[in-house]
Image (cartoon, rainbow, N blue to C red):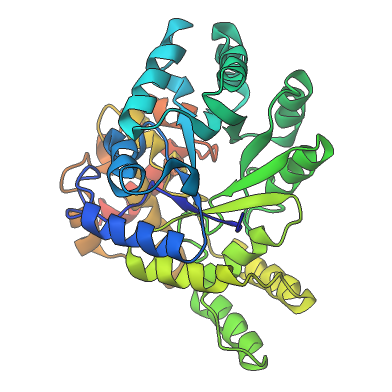
Length: 373
Ligand code: SF4
Ligand code: SF4
């Protein structure tokens, strides 16, 4: 199996303010090109696109291709599970939404220390183990956002899982918060294959600040092949790790898909020079990025004031790099959302944030920057 997976959490939209307004015809063209170039892995989840991603997968992929010609991964929304019976209810719904009889890869979605306690309480692991035994899931695992120590504990207590899905990118590799590198080593120690999510860190590694871009351009201009894109560097970094089976990329248009599949078709692993390059770029980024937000939007689901946290944090990071505020963007980003100053300080967003960001504190910084001028 080729190492690039099609993440269906950032599909093309007709209206950027409406995550359910998926452009199915463009999605179909993307699916066609992806399969045509020999890639097979698709990843969806219950909440993506306001719960419309699974149905989009059905329309663009499942209805149009033989089942054995693609590999499909889906995830149990463990956060919404409030009692044991909910597992079966959600799974039945997912099978129906996707229009399939089984999943090739089935995951408990977004496990971490606190969510592990509830998952154990309601029998999440026995449930997916039974799915595998009964032929409804060919491989079972979980996606994970927490520290390496808890991952070690879960994998020790649940050796039955086949794989784990981890956030791995070069910026987070040595980060104390995300612990990409340490988590990767734990998975490897337990003999589990790794699926990678957020290789481009929610787009952060696709648009490098000027100083990092200069390092990037200087390096490739001295090589004998065309200058790649910063995003391709990030995806290849993750794909070059020997225990990695798939690197997911949430592709939003046919151009991105064309680009990703072009360099991953005949995959070229990282060179020693590129390892040094990403280390230098990481040093530059660490000195500029303020909020380690990946724009996963989990916090948005929880916020009673519907505050557009990821986009506001994107503006904070932009300010950290450029020193400029952009009121026009704030107006747009807050159009159908609460303003940062409307935050109730309830903390619900911080309980779910996989990056453990002090959201309330950074929203205060944002208010100082954008609302107290
Ligand atoms: S603390 Fe503020 S931003 Fe976070 S969920 Fe509560 S109201 Fe929303
Ligand atoms: S603040 Fe946290 S939960 Fe919200 S989008 Fe960013 S990384 Fe995701």
